[in-house]
Image (tube, rainbow, N blue to C red):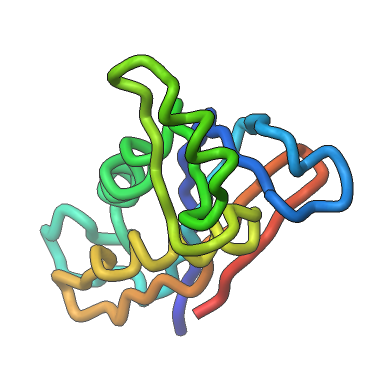
Length: 149
């Protein structure tokens, strides 16, 4: 029988949805929550550091910090064909954090992006069939998107 765990990181990240019919077409930001949902068997190996766990929460946190948080926290995520946003960001002082992506940075697309960043790093050292099953992205307290494996 498998068990699921969840761990999240939060980022302060800017974006815009260039073709949006309403205010989301303007540059703005959110306090995003990227939450990894991992499935696996509870480690039974006696004396193992992860005994009794699916995966150590601190290991999940480290993966999320390195591959999601440290990439987009206090950055602006911009679609590669959003010429207006790219031009505006080009005028910023040196050191501005911008991540140019091949997709419109909606919560749905950011969920898939984060999944793709984290998935290769969820590995089992104890043969407990670890699997990243979903990445949940909360864009606002009332708006959540999920990418499932």
